[in-house]
Image (cartoon, rainbow, N blue to C red):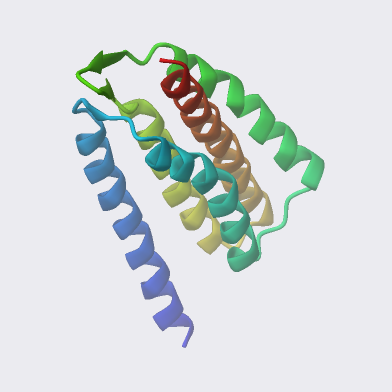
Amino acid sequence: MDTLWLLIALAGIVFTLAMTILGAWMASKPRPLGVGRLLLAVTTAPLGLLFYVLAGGQQLRPWLAVLAFLVGILPGVIFGMFTKIYRRGGKVIGTYSVTVTLIWGATLALSAFCNLLPSFLISALGLLALCFASGIHLGNYSTLLLRRILV
C-alpha cells in the first residue's frame, strides 16, 4: 500500500509541474482581467495552502508559517505593480505574471516532494517555501485586483 501512495504522490507532483508549465504559458498572453477570475486567484493562495497543510499532515510552527506568508506578500505586490494593465474598449487587459505562476507551482511540487522524504526538517523547509510562495501569489493577485478595480 505504501508503494501505491508513493506512486500517487509522484504522479501528483508531475501533474503539478505540468499544470504549472501550462499555466505559465497561458499567463504570458495578454487577456481580460476579470474581477471574478482575480478574486478566485486571491482566494486560491490561502485556501490552497490551508488545504495542503491539512491534507499533507505537515507540521510547521504557526508563527513561522505566517511570517513566511507575510514576507512573501511584499515581492508579490511588487510583481503586481509592474504588471502592465490597460483598457481596450470596455475591457481591462493585462498579463498575469509568469514568474509568480512558476514560483508557486514549483514550490508546491517541491513541498510535496519534500513531504515524501523521511526528514522532518526537509519537509518543514518545503512547507516554509510554499508559505512564502503563497504569500507572493496573494500579494500579486491582490494588487492586480485592486489595480483592476481602480482602472
